Image 1: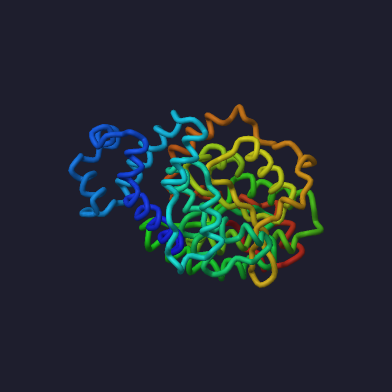
Image 2: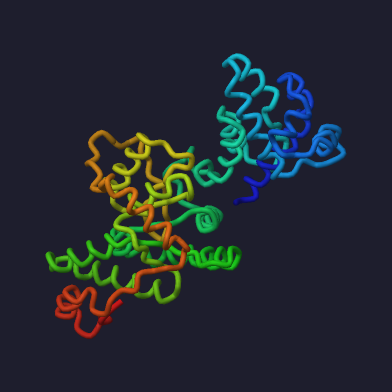
Length: 347
């Protein structure tokens, strides 16, 4: 989470503590009732209201949950009054104005607003969707998002430059979390590379580049192959658990998945980006896309339960598929004819 998000949360907590007493009285809620529903002792609540004790993040979440439930029972007019009273005072001048404006527009329950601070990457780029990611954006990406790529990125000649840019942030995130942080691909990516190698002799250079990229970054602990049939299955199975970004040069695929998530909104939408020169990436601008023309997803909803159970077993971040020796033998045979002695035998 970026410094700006931490500051946004600090404003939320500080403001909530200041208005807790008057808001409670407007709601006609007693200290005892709030204590029973939130699990926070009455004396702690009284000290928070009187400014003798600081409101912690944990207690804020507990109180926000109580207030969210209470608000569901109020009329729309009463809700607006209470939301006005409880609107955070974003009084930190170091927070960019467009961050503040974004959070002021959120009229969802308090917990939604709290967890929306994780989406600072989307907020930062929402006004300029084609803006290239800065190093700070890549740091946010590595620390907060599960990053997936497809074969269109692997065989992009700019992919190596992108990896050079994001690698320090992946390694730092691994050090911070204590577990490996990867760029990920799914089994269908390998399958499509193999299929292209078997059916086409025209793009061996790009296929060779993709294969070597898999081998290189996998050996360096930067790329993981997950045991899932396709990325759609991953996004669906972990809809509310993780934040995802798919980096793909296949705009049709991005439009297709984005359209499906609009039909089933998630708290944290999947982001989609493409690779550009010098290893830059930028989010897709879907406003300029005719999404109704997107093809239907090839992912079979009947497999939802099976995929979810499978991923629950292996979702430890660190169970990659071990590629069998000569798994791409057909590709290797063709490629070696074109590029003698230049392609490793397996990955």
